[in-house]
Image 1 (spheres, rainbow, N blue to C red):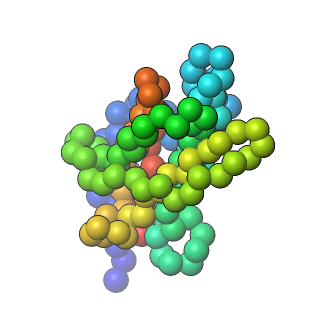
Image 2: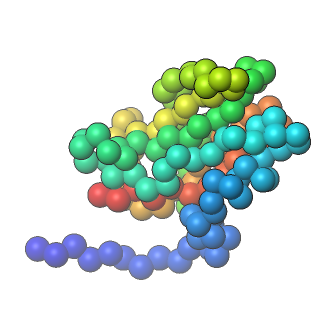
Amino acid sequence: MKKHLTPFLIPPAMLAALFLSVTTLEKNAGAAGTLGNSAALNRTVTPNSDKKNDTFIFKCYNPRDFHITASIYGLRGERLASMRLKAIVFETPRLYYYLEWDPNSGGRAPGGIYIYEVIVNDKTYKGLVVVVR
């Protein structure tokens, strides 16, 4: 039996976020590069337990140990999940926090497009992540 995808409309600004490069994120990241190395490492997630892109990961430069709020939202703006801290890594001379969202935890998220938001001190990173099932 073939599965048919239901068409839906995506606002152009949200669709454009899928194609932002890491370089673009770094240029817009904040004063004097204090948070300039923060970026989504993968925007397409295939949670099929093959250990390749099973989760969404955001690499967050946070040298002053600011509080981090990281959430996943549906396209209608409803908050669906919080991202969890996966690891804290010291990459000389920088300190990175790796944040993770597993679409299979806390109830299975269906395939589709989701919005991520990571807030570090006064800087907000937003973008889209696609879950393919």
